[in-house]
Length: 248
Ligand code: G3P
Ligand code: MG
Figure 1 (tube, rainbow, N blue to C red):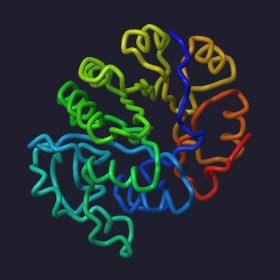
Figure 2: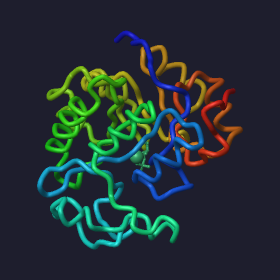
Figure 3: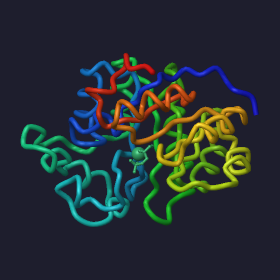
């Protein structure tokens, strides 16, 4: 596999605005932009009526005013929820965001995107396909969003639906067959929990022609070390400390 020209910056704001805003909302993207970030990561899944929207968990309780499994509810109901109040009163009434709204914000701000495909349990293939198809349409004329997922099934479905969108395999635990998996899925990147990485592994992954994104790096010293090793992208919650100008 050859290393492609890489259009993405070194620093990525996790869930839009890191720790400074309610995750996966338009308000979070606004905060990320205000801190100068030029790329965001966020989590995308399907509503019951197949709308692509942003939410990390399968269930609504932690980050919205709703209850139950998000993927079992239609967008008409999800769109009335409050996804900001749990974080602070100043974000009260912030609704969940549709992928289409996020694409528009990215266009407005000239921001690049890492769309993490986060299927509701059991909906891996459907979600991978629908997110990839929506992303292709919504990001037309912009730098292609980088798709990623912990789910190989979702990535395979994204690959089959829209092969030209770049893909990264997410790993939270080390897997010795990372190269076979990324080859099979046609990935351009490996997205790793930064705790899995050392200098030797960094060299091996780079030698295989893959880019590396690490999450979630909130210690500037660790971020510098990872960049020195040759890690391509740092995904951070500390968007005020590890900002766009940050370097090794
Ligand atoms: O995509 C990197 C990171 O977001 C993966 O973990 O749980 O924060 O979605 P999580
Ligand atoms: Mg994520």
